[in-house]
Length: 452
Image 1 (cartoon, rainbow, N blue to C red):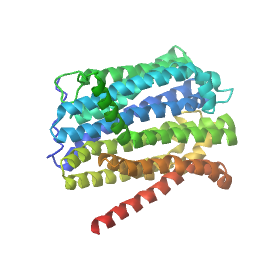
Image 2: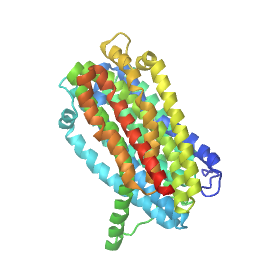
Image 3: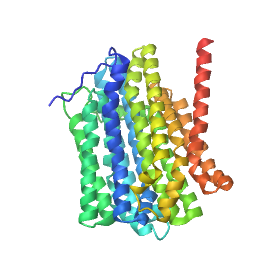
Image 4: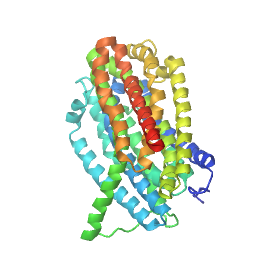
């Protein structure tokens, strides 16, 4: 089967090139989000709201893991795409191989340690004693396999850069379908509870990672694994290369870490104001926000190889065209998501829990407020992807730090004092809105510099 698609980053018309990358990337991201959402629906409906809250307690670990995978993926793909533009495919292969090996070894060590300390970590993440047994059981069958999830997330960048966005999409679609089928089987048919939910997701990740490895091991592809020397000089070069990749990809890690921070801080504030029911209600937003984030990230990632390649090739006109197209698409995406959340809160929440329960009523009341974040989030993410593609890590880092930490945490802590429970729901929208104002200011300042 021919995996390559007819893609030329340097000469194909930008609108056609962007569309060719966007559809498979978006579908792949949506199915990737289906991993998270499917667990929420099956756990909430098949095990109960306490189980849903327990999974949400552990969710920051999942987002941190995705962040690490994306950090290596973005950093290595930006560097590799510039090397390709300069006619150095072997150097690009070395970058990709270094990223995969180093990230996999690091994550195996990290998640092995977390699994050994699962009860302590669950308490640190805000678990109550009532939720602790379910949270720990889920962690035992989910956390050790997160290394495969990270490989799947980073591999998407390398496969798309090699000109195969449709295969990259399949790497997300097939594992997601496996996860959905196994979630139903393990939870509703076999009654395996939290163990079944964790195992179903982990098996899906293993299949996806195997598909990535199979692609990158194929010598017919330009972007593939290559032998890396183990001499002292080569190891020094590996450390230097990986350090530069991490510098470029770090804003993406912080972006995923921002979702983890949202979950972590929100769980603490909700459990303080509304107890376990509040955490269960907030978990609906936490399951759905990654879907929105991944859809917007797909827009940015579709433009990223176009911008990086043409930046390396010295074509600023094509870079400008790609970023404007991405911003327009992100704005429309944000309007669409916000409208759906505003109009159908009962139907959305009803997918996760029974109507008339305490968590259901809290979530339905808060979802329209939370939806305001979705419009501004889309613009912020595309702006971050643009700066990364231009090898400008500092502005990308600033955007991520503002929306996910500097604005978000004070909003979570201060707004409930002013507006009660509604203030908790408005914390994320307020942080995204403030960041978007900063992005607009940065854009105007850059335009003024060019004119000057």
